[in-house]
Length: 195
Image 1: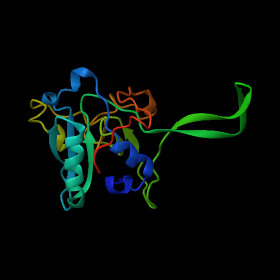
Image 2: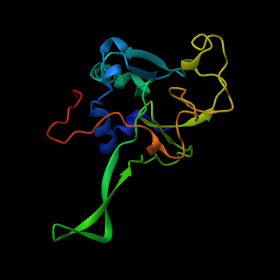
Image 3: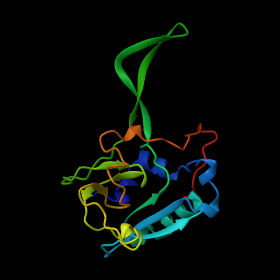
Image 4: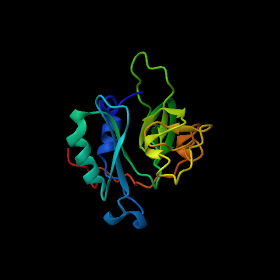
């Protein structure tokens, strides 16, 4: 699976993860702890989690842990997010705007460049806010029986290997159908997490 370290080499994803998302009021109070940092330390097979009241706190913790982790994500368990978007020009197509000929553009979703030899399909996990692998799992340490009240997880569903979100709540065929809670401000008002 592509790692967070590899994702951070991509300028589009790096810009996306540095942008502080705006949450709906009901989730925006720090006491709700809407953000969950999920990391896998080097040499470990399981994922560790910690909740945070603000995205900035989760980002700062991730930044501190980056040298020690094999992979990770800043997850929002309550809300789903679309992948980063960008505008591209359509070759040879123009429209008239205010009497001027302007090249036509369209908005497309960002996709990661997978490392050579990577053969697993990657899908956008709207809760981990990153591309990940979805597999059928019969256990997941974030979805332990203790956390699920003794109930087993449904091993017939594809699940995010990081957060455990199932294909029932993540549309693997069309990640753009997910709601986007973070409004991308203009460059003059863009807030960034401290690098």
